[in-house]
Length: 100
Image (cartoon, rainbow, N blue to C red; front, side):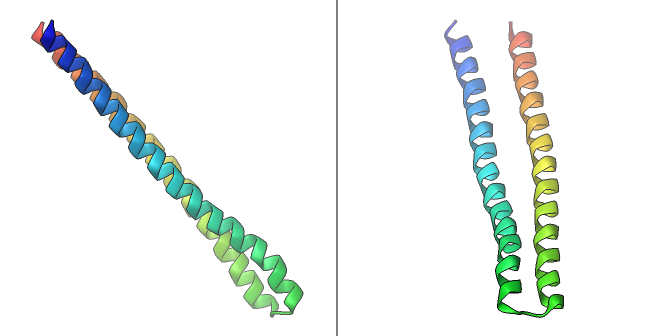
């Protein structure tokens, strides 16, 4: 009975650790996405100043590329970490069932 308590506690700490890691990385991806959006907003201000069209288009293209890469990597990261979390949960439950 006491061993079951520690196994459950280990499972909860695994889930807690994974979810904390996912939350931290989500915030990082949000910051990078925010930088891309800020660049896009800056293009409007840069055009008002009178910077050449080539420069403003280059900055705009850079912001779009950053956002696209950020969203793609965030999606891949979320899928990978979710898969790892689910497989770890099932592995630990399977180990618990074999011990019984």
